[in-house]
Amino acid sequence: MSSRGVDREPPTTPNEQVLFAAGTHGYAAFRIPALVTSGTHVLAFCEGRRDSAGDTGRIDLVVRHSPDSGATWGPLTVVTRRPDHTTGNPMPFVTATGEIVLLTMTNGASVHESELMRPGVPEGDRRRVWVQHAPGPGQPFGPPVEVTDQVRRSDWGWFATGPGHGLTLAHGPERGRLIAACTHSILAAAPGDHSYGGHLMLSDDGGHTWRVGAVDSTARPAGAALNPNEATAAELPDGVVYVNARNQASAGGRLGAWSDDGGESLRAPFRPHPDLPVPAVQGSVLANGSGTLWLSTPGHPDERRDVTLWRSDDSGAAWRRGPVLHAGPGAYSDLALLADGTPAALVEAGSGSAYESIRFIHPTRTEGIQ
Image (tube, rainbow, N blue to C red; front, side, top):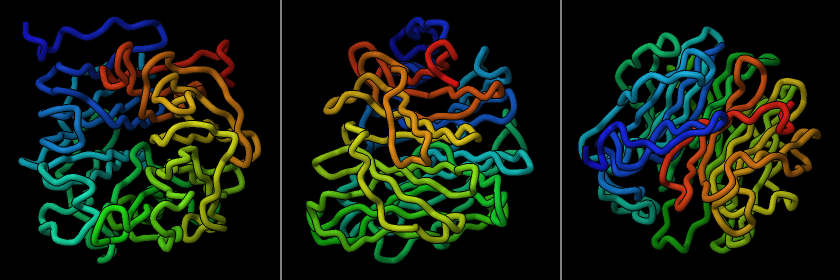
């Protein structure tokens, strides 16, 4: 069987299972994990990159389903494919009624991010936002419905959801609201003329319609020390929404912001987290429901490796290092709570490269998870 066959996947360990391996199922690589749970059901999403491991090219959105908290997994299924386009940045939600909602982004397969930050790209190749619905976990998704005109402002160039799981509010008057942590840039004549900005997308009807909520400052000059990108959100027990973002600036690290009104606005612009000395890379934040926040990112200060679970017990103000989820090369990740209340992670990881596979990792309580 060729290296693209479906059976030649790397070995697994009891707490680390390879779900997507580069060079299998007709895909050169798998990237950009997103994880969501509903009871004992687990859905693991990612991008299936057909041409290469790069961000451009023909990219599908794929999923695997586990009915038993990750003990066993069903086959890989293509959720959506658009000819000659990328389909990516998966952001799944579980609604208050148990429906699965999935946001994705598309753009032309040959267009690079730097081009999308500038004017001149044909509208059909620009970043566009889509939503799909499934009645429940493990059930097929309906066709993608475009919602770009509801949520993309005319002066935005780059635009991305997450990536990673979305947030369904469980407290307060906005209970049931879906919140998508997103990124954008302002259209500029040259890539160096811009910085990124963060914003939130909101839905109050189970993901059928969307609107823009909080928008972080977009007036930062090029080279600013704070450059929020690839954001993730969690809800605290008092209903406050905490947003954590990659800092695209040269200093790297993480940024934090808080919303007191269900994502309509931010209490203040993003601020740095000096106790998270990590590279510029995507991460995932998760609330355990009783006041603890978890954050997964590479734990090395300069390299994408040693994906680590960080912990905050003060609403995200301060963070401390927890267990290493994967020792060795590792990059993007996403977190979700399993039925027993412990976090699990979907992680880009390997032995020689972070992009060899995407693995489902379930650290045990004996590894410091409570």
